[in-house]
Image 1: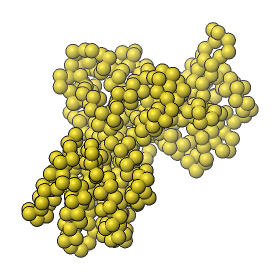
Image 2: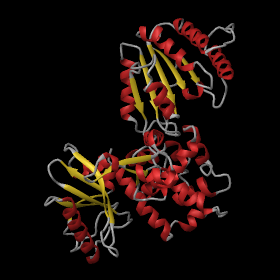
Image 3: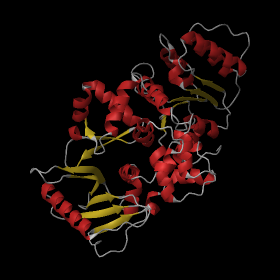
Image 4: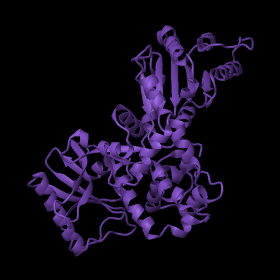
Length: 475
């Protein structure tokens, strides 16, 4: 699809940049395949004064030669000398822009981290270009874009040298939410209901590139076979490139996400340290980088301090890959069509739906009518002191400033979910234990989050509120 879907806030920000009366240094970042380049190209309708894409794994001399060729191709003199440094390259870019006439001049550097090859003076010369010339004008829009989010954050956004506090605008692209996925699929000609869209979301996440590979003439199950299990499938080898394209020493990142994929309840930093042997600032950096790219989500345990922060794997593609693609070792090209109703898949869907809820907290709050009320979200884990008793975890708790606490139960079911007499008893006991252990005397209520809502039942008395696809699919 060649149409821009969603991204209203980002488009509005780009328009403010265009309408600005000063030069703007814009950083656009986000994980691989999220649509950064597509957003910029569609918004500016390919009308750039200068546009250059960094070359992956190319040394400085090759980057400079390519930069010179592109500069000539886009209108500079063919007599440009060979560039020996980024200082020369930026000097010629400056001369080119000075001859570009009146009006705003849009310079788009895509995959900019790749330009900073080993031994390069790229960042220091970019600093000089911006500080000595571009920032002194009022007609420059410089857009820096890159998937290597760590590099963008460390070298540009948090630069302590000449670019310190020089970034005028930052745009971070996140994966689509369910509402945006629905818009995308409808525009692409899919006739899937919301239950199927959630199933799709729990495999591909809200990554636009992955959604673009789906074919409307195929069922969801056929599409998943086509993308993951057929010989030469488009996404079967995506994992090998995904983390390596984003991070140096990608094996450490993969080790952590693999660990988190096996622990549905999540792990604290201390747990991760004990399991991996990573510690200190190095581990903190890895976790921050994973969270920054939307691979990991962190949240507090109810009533605990920051050191007890829970980390969970939130990237749906990674979780699906570990669970079914890497581990299947199958030559069945219709694996998903043959197994999507297996008990193991249904259990995995139930767990994945919990993450859907955690990633749509704004929609849940809006559905509860508490968007304007200050809240804290957390989880709570009960570990019994006596052997033989079962513990449990409440994955989402919403504590409101007006002293209401929502214990959220997330249940993935195509049909209305039935609360049985036995389950009502279990809910009542869990609520009692939660109140007892947290010293909360009143105001603790149950909210059920399930696609089709609850069946009418005499055992629904504990339920305060419901969230269905109607609320989850709002903007």
